[in-house]
Length: 211
Image (cartoon, rainbow, N blue to C red; front, top):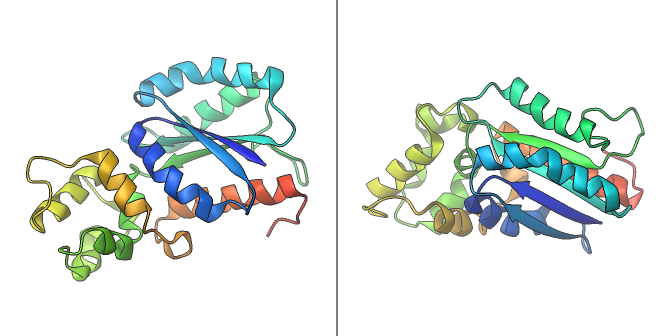
């Protein structure tokens, strides 16, 4: 199987290039196509999917990944699902029991950095001056419920430990942390949904029974 990832920014690309090989089956291939921002991805997605629908090989799949930010999660997911439906592509959410699907839409709650908070061991491994107990603080215990922006929260944690005084380099941090992440231990529910969807996508393409 080959997976085409469509993501909203280069930091997501950096993370997926490390994470995808840890989740996909051995022998699966992938590529990651970043847009400049979320607005551009959503604007260009309908035509991009329509273009794929004309030539997509049988063993290719598409994964669309966007941050929720301050949007309504259900409305954002419906927008992604609608773009695939109008392109004539079956999504995981719209597929019937046993039906193959070509598109997996996933929304990160609230931002990519919530996935990093979901694996505090990876954060500490990437940045040894960060004290491990940071993850026990009430504000960080549930990665998908961090208030005030997760990238801002990660920046505060790292700056408190002496890193990035002039501001968080999102791409560099995404690359460093994701390289140390273990997909099976992540506490973020949205990461779990992404991981499980990607596993099922790979299994169904290989003809295996989904778990």
